[in-house]
Image (cartoon, rainbow, N blue to C red):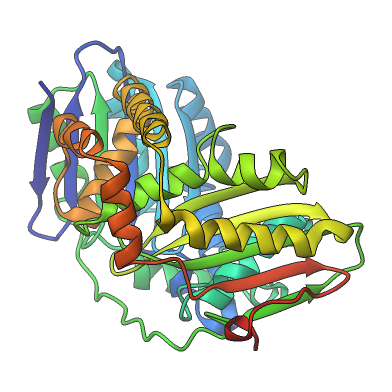
Length: 416
């Protein structure tokens, strides 16, 4: 039986935990509502720079002392910036969890944000941004999301050259004070833990943290949703990106939507791989993935091909997306079901995966799903249920973006 615990402190800080008796490790995952969609227009990239700077000294420790303390505890750690959240995670031996959380109490509440580190952090962010020029597939998907979602939801964590160069210590510290706060923050822990001791420690570390105002997001109009756009680049390859709306996590059709995208892309037997890549030899890479926010979700597709095969690749990919509602075979659903269940089993054995899932479930659903609930939903998937979902929520209209030397032909409804 799963052992799931929850406590929300008066300041809005939420603690989740799962005791896993069969492991000797523990993982923690901080989810802060400070993602790149909150980057001001004049400081795009500030969330990425801030997340790096927060790890360069905190509390009584400078940059080197903090790094050494984490290394001495054997903490495998990282930080990342998503659209909605700033994330800090780590994994270590269960006996070192308490000491690791003490360090992150300083990172979140008392970061030094040292002025002498700003230039180095800003330089790294600019190098990462410049590196996108050598990653056409990643650059394409950034542009696809920017066009498909209403701003600022389509903002990318890499930011802009102008935004990063405009950053200074005063701006960074102001952004930290405005966005890094207890209300809305989730800490999830999974592993061989003592719940009462964990709750008491987290209460000492974060219980007296004063809350802040939640920033208001005003959504604009997507610049190209349901349209076609082209990024000109002299290259021997063409990158193709396609996006269309789906149902968000928590929707009654969520598992059918997940089933549908896994029919399209779930291994070498998946529709897109077999129909576009294998049968016709049109592209070297093709994929589809599901991305969700609280109130909306999308299917994002990618194909990389040579210039002479780009038009045919786009045409056949769109055909497969639209004709999926015409029928799905039982063996396709069985393959999807086995794949998703295998992922679930692997997750049960990983403290890091479980910590991430706890936080994600709580954010999207306000609760933690049990393994039994997920298995029941996966067992209920049938060709008929997925096809019915696709008739209720058909693929399209499509936002299409291509990157390469020549633009492609699209239907009238997708043209600018």
